[in-house]
Length: 341
Image 1 (cartoon, rainbow, N blue to C red):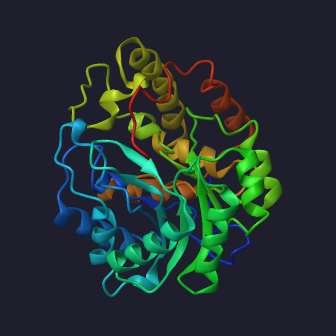
Image 2 (cartoon, rainbow, N blue to C red):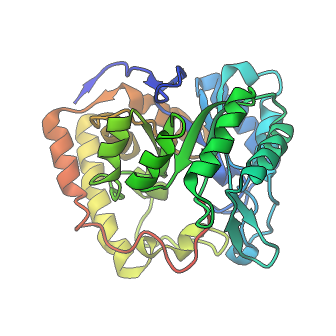
């Protein structure tokens, strides 16, 4: 392993470039235990001061069912936090948000890709974010009742109108990505991707590479697992989404912690943290990859940003890929119930 600066990352062919590690903001509203608005706003501002450029939110963050044991802040809550945090700082960041997932009022959610809803959603997001444009606008989850061409066509009109600079998709397969790009250039594809979640490698990554689409991994640290900070005694509160995920339970947890112990040993030899090694592995993939780790702790954000200076050799990359071979990771990605990420 060597140390050195990491290049900035382009968002597809949009002309937008950012620092190679962004910040996911979902956890500042919900899903990972109790939150505090004032602390979240302060943390976002401090992260910008540290050099974070890409901020990733969604109109949905804060709106999921209260079944996770904590009060629901409400639809649009996370965007409102970001809007407050960006007062006087809007020109310092590249702002990404998403639409389509929305609560129904009975504890469930639907995905709405109707062209008329695209217009309604973006205008509401602009108001909450207190800005006149969104840099990267994602279609959060596909609406199975609306052809993707219709939705992306409506999104393209937002670009023409100056409300949006670039378009993104989230959690789509290779076919949907191809169909979308045929309508308008797609700058980014956001999906869960990390050392321990590599489901998109076989089919989706090659197509994204071919089409010039940057991959934006969410949960690049395995929802905290790859930081090496969990032990076998960890118990997640009901308000923590991980309490529902198989990989964090029982024998699955025990088995996965053994892999993380090996990662921690590898990181120690390199003079880095396990999380930094996990992020460096992503940045070294043969494709434009722009991870957006999430944290409410400023020291963790600073640690994550420093991962862009970690360089791994070809042998390092091969060893890490073999360590987290998908066959070795124990448990399904999701349980029965899960929100839109």
